[in-house]
Length: 119
Image (cartoon, rainbow, N blue to C red):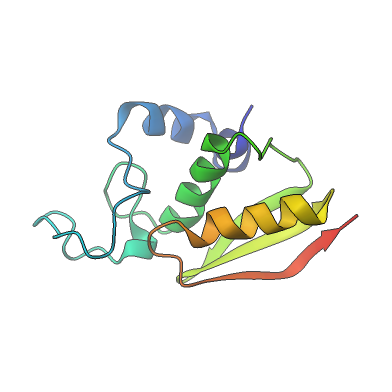
């Protein structure tokens, strides 16, 4: 089981497999009519509106990163365009990698790690 499936359910993992991934869409890319009104932090895995779109795309990005195995002690959430990481990560190296990956997802303006500990 990966990040996306553990945090949001297997149906989201299936959605990610069948949909055109939107996580790497650059903010400067021209918006299509369908996506022009959806804020980047609310863009779901399938390009449609999703209240937790950013958190799901961050979880998906974690799944795609070979350095980040799923950790059942860490959760991903969002507050508007801020990615919120909660829980306990085993090392500073993984902590830093998670922040780097999360910051790289379109729509993320910051990463809140105040609820994430190392140890």
